[in-house]
Image (cartoon, rainbow, N blue to C red; front, side, top):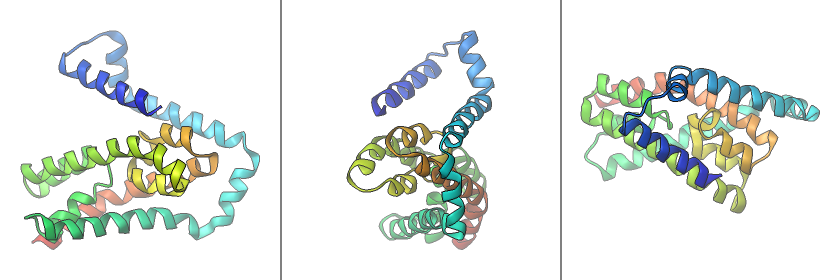
Length: 200
């Protein structure tokens, strides 16, 4: 699964770089949201087939937010540590980390709030987080626990890394993964500007 994901990514990069256009590629590019919705629909079917899973999730109540909260706090701690290692301020470092893997939004937002250099770093670091998740989810799922996989993926746990979750974890973790991704994605547009204010 990891190899297929990497090959698909490389093939996509090649198609984009070579400017290859055909009906299928143009359809995917212009309807990428539909592809994501179909993926989410298939996840919903998988969850619905396991009758006890929704009842189990209901038992968590507020606890269901522990994983997203831990993911966000852990990421910000990483940004704080990097502010001592790099030339960037505490606000800039935490703002870059606050992308939580959502590289497209983080890059554009920080280019507007800061400068092109910080935007580029945010784009690359959050893209690398997503790519690192593809490599590490199978290893972490096998040697640690399924919940740790969710934290690795952060905001991407509801979309791009979700197929990896489906392959290497279980249905309960997939549900928690989607919730984690939704919460993290909702926090990113608020967290980045907040952290950047610390830089001023």
